[in-house]
Image (cartoon, rainbow, N blue to C red; front, side):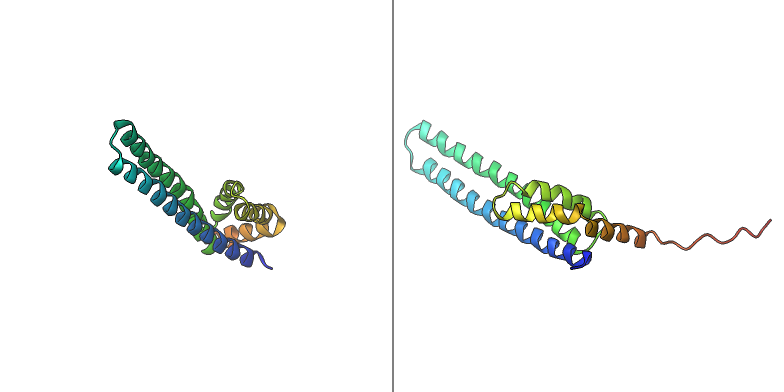
Length: 144
């Protein structure tokens, strides 16, 4: 496989990872938020209603945290898929972050780190940087 193919494949994997994180965050928000709303509406004591409010707050905080990581994975996947030069830095950071998500995140993180720190990844992203900086040389200084 070439560096371009690895980069596009990693982009697709990070987009899928981000989509799965959004889906999981939405499910967790619906479960905890629904449980909190149910507790607040069906309870008669103030302690039980407070516990329902805590569940709703936890649902909001967890959803925001998960969406933050999902957004980072989605942005990284998009940059990798579009083969931008900054994608290597974003990919290294995202690969380190997804290592904690066993088993799919761990596999994606190891594959990403293997590619970005390997020779194929270094050469590919060095080539992207060189190709984007190929400006024509300045005109000769003939006025002297």
